[in-house]
Length: 331
Ligand code: SER
Image 1 (cartoon, rainbow, N blue to C red):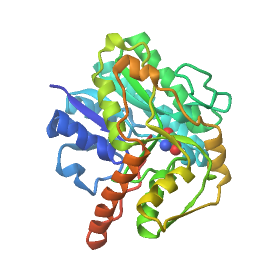
Image 2 (cartoon, protein in one colour; image 1 turned 90 degrees about the vertical axis):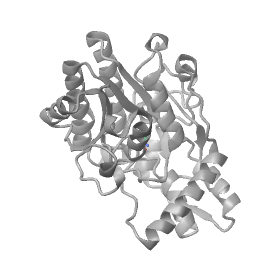
Image 3 (cartoon, protein in one colour; image 1 turned 90 degrees about the horizontal axis):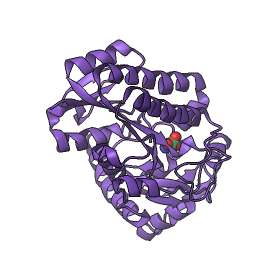
C-alpha cells in the first residue's frame, strides 16, 4: 500500500492526526514531515522527514522516497499571524500548496487540504452560513484559504487529482497548542482554568464562532478522505462544525466543573476584527448529505474531555516534561 505524507505534522492538527492515521493505516504507512525537528513521540512511532513546502524538491524527494499516495497538507500560517506577516502567509499558504499540488500531479497523489471558517468574509451571511455562498474574506489568511479552495478544485477538474478539503472551525485540543489563530482562546481558556482559575480573553464575551473538539476533526478528515468519490458534489471545501459558542458560554460551561473560574475580556482590535468578519455559525448539511458527517462532541462533552485530559497532561508535565508545543498549521 502506498504511504501517507503529512506536512506541518508538528502543529496542532498534525500532532494528533499523525498518531490517528498511524493507528488506522499502520505506523510505517504514515510519514510525518515538518520544518522543525520533533521533540515528542512523533519520530519514535514512525518515519519523520524534514521537508520545507517552499522547496518543491524536498516534497518531491519525500514522495518518491516513501512511495506516497496521499498528502495531508497541513503546513500553513493561521489567521492572526497571517495579519502580522501577510507576505509570509501568502508565500507559505499559497506557495506551499502550489508546490504540493504540482508534486501530487506528477505522482498522482490524493491531497487533503484544511480550509477554514476564515474563508468567509464580511459579505457572507453570518448565521447558518451556506456551503455555497459569497466568499470575499477581508484577511490575508482568508484570501489564501479561498484561493486554496479554488486551486484544489482546479487541479481536480483540470488534472483529475483527488483533492478534498474541510472548512474547519476553531479546533479545541489538548496535545499541541494552536499557533496564532483567532480561535486560540478556546484552547488557552482550558489551560488557564486549570492553572490559574482565570482567563483574560482577547475577544468580546459575546463573539460567537464555530468550534470543534479535535477528535471530531480527526474523524471528519479521515471520513472525508475515505468517502465514495461518486457521492461528492463538492470537494474544496466542506463546511463542518460541532458547535457555535461565545467566550461567555465556554466560560459558563467550565464554571460547571470549576465554580471559581472567572473570565475577563480585553478585546484585541486585530483579532476582534478578524472574528467579526467570520460566520457566527455555519451550515454543514452538504457534508452530512454527501459523506455522512455528524459531530459527536458538543460543548458539554468537549469541556468534560478537555478538563480531564488536560489535568492529567499538565500534572505529568509539571512533574517531568516540557510544555505543549505551539503549532504552525491550519484549523
Ligand atoms: N483556527 C483558525 C484561526 O483562528 C481558523 O481556521 O486562524
